[in-house]
Image (cartoon, rainbow, N blue to C red):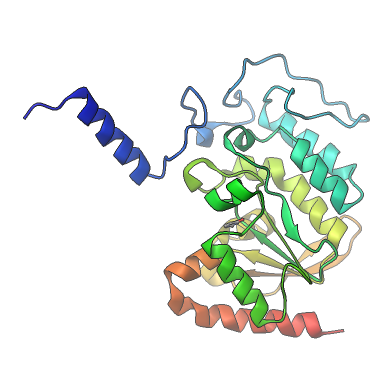
Amino acid sequence: MEISNKDAARALLRWYTEMGVDEAVAAQPADFHSWGGDKPAPLTKPRAAPKPVSETATPVFNSQTPTIPADEAIAAAKTIAAACDSFAALDQAVAEFDGCPLKAGARNTVFADGVPDADLLVIGEAPGRDEDRIGKPFVGRAGQLLDKMLAAIGHSRTENVLISNVVYWRPPGNRAPTPIETSICRPFVDRLIDITKPKVLLLAGGAPTQALLGLTGIMRARGVWREIITSDGGSIPVMPIFHPAFLLRQPANKRLAWHDLLAVQARLREG
Ligand code: URA
């Protein structure tokens, strides 16, 4: 049987879709996983000499800034995040930051949704397709389940919850964010915790648990209280829980998730 170029192209596109490659990010393919601090970032625009990151001045990172090496992006994110003294300032700084290569392939920056001075902060993994389209975290099916889980303990993003992620732009094909992408966004995550000072921090899934606590294996990590120390020395109780997308795939684990949520509710009611 003869296979035409058209058939071959169709078969290739079908295979890409099945593998989760469902969006064109740049004209040339780039291996985001192999991008390190010593290598140039995947380029969507011609690369100019990186701007020096001064220790004293707040670096300007916006859509005119060329993509820079990861260590410079992390340094810039630290300086910019440290200069933010309110949720609104941080929100704006993240929207203007161009140091994370994920931004090149995203429609929207997805920073946070909910009440900035909430007693409960939930941090998930990364925006997906729906979040990228709408510009808010956890608005797809997993988000709807998260809202139900929060409602079960008397919480909602309209009243007393703030929701965010460890990266603020959708990874292509909904892959997990790489450690470098997470490290670049990390100063903003830390600053969000510093500024909002929640009574309890929930880490939804393995990615935020690994990023913020250095723990692998959500099965073992979930349901156990840990703590995060803020920049002013305060302690925030943290609990890793199952990601709602995982619970949609494995509803039998909702029993354990409910157990964890009750512990969270009790903690929120203390004091
Ligand atoms: N999953 C996440 O971890 N975060 C979102 O915002 C959406 C889905």
